[in-house]
Each structure stands twice: as structure tokens, then as C-alpha cells.
Image (cartoon, rainbow, N blue to C red):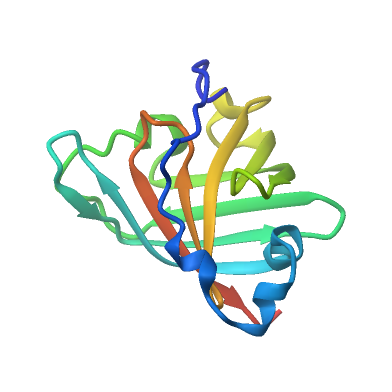
Length: 158
């Protein structure tokens, strides 16, 4: 459920990057997710097909005990209205934490939200499709009503 709506997994997701031949591809997805991920790009596709690159910085963290946290800050406001802002952001900031589970068959990770700057997300399960491209993590919503893509890079400084 996202925002009171049932989340559906896209039946034809594009996971071509999953075939990447890095040494870490031998690890299972949960093991590969563990650590900190620095956001390197974010974009949202509007209903008219326009792709809007978003000027954000962010950090996503998964730990071995099954906890996660994510936060992103908009550095500048986009010219267009971004549909996901009303769900996830407060004053240009998006942050939540909780636990996570991974479904490797469906290539999804579910964030079980315990706390959030957007209070309507507390208690919700946010399902994200994922793929890996070497040290990059590509996330998209599993909810067919949302149309964004965020790319993270493994942060090896922690």
C-alpha cells in the first residue's frame, strides 16, 4: 500500500542491468544492498511524457539487522509540478526510516515505514523495484501510478 492505494508490481520491468558481471553480482540482493548509497541522479516522468531531472542530494542506508533510512533534499525547485512531491516531500525534503524486506524473485525491496517527514507514509509499505549496475543501484516505484527513477552509487567512505 502506498498512500492508501494498493501497490502493483510492473509485470514487465526492465532489469537489463542485473546481468552486470562484477564480483559483487555473486552476492544475493539483500547482501548487495547493505551499506550506504549516495544519490547520483533522480528524474520523474510526467503524464505527458516529459522527463524532469531533479536537482537533489540524498543518502540511502541499509544495515544487516534489517533497518533502513533514506533522505533526499531538493537543491533547487523544478519548473514543473512534480506529482510525487505531495506524497513524499515536506518543504523540499524527503526522509523516512524503518525496516526492509527483499523479494529477489520480483526484484523488489519493501521499505516498512516507521517514521517519516511525510506523516501519511508512517505505517505504509513502500515497494521499490531495483536493479544493480556494478556499484550502482537503480530504484523505481513498483506502484504503476508513480513514474520516477533514482540512481545511487555505493558509498565506500563509511
